[in-house]
Length: 72
Image 1 (cartoon, one colour):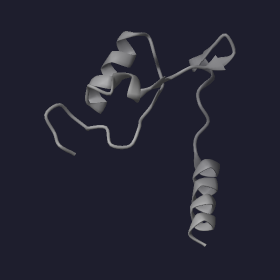
Image 2: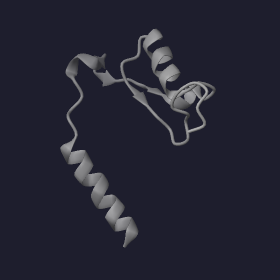
Image 3: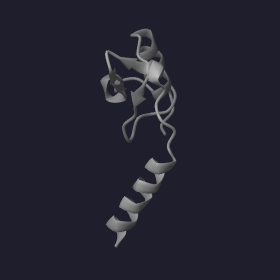
C-alpha cells in the first residue's frame, strides 16, 4: 500500500512539473550534473562548481550537506 501511495505521489508531482526550457538543450539533449560528483562539498558549493563548469542543471543526492560547515 505504501509503495502504491509513493508511486501515485511521484506521478502527480511529475504532472505538475514545469517543462525544462528548450534553451538548456545541448545538441538536442538536456545535460546535467549529479551533485555526488562534488560529494566533498556542500549543495551550494556543488551548484557553484557546476555553474563554473558551464552546467545549467544539477541533480542532488540524499544526505548532502546544505551549506559549508552545517551538519544537516
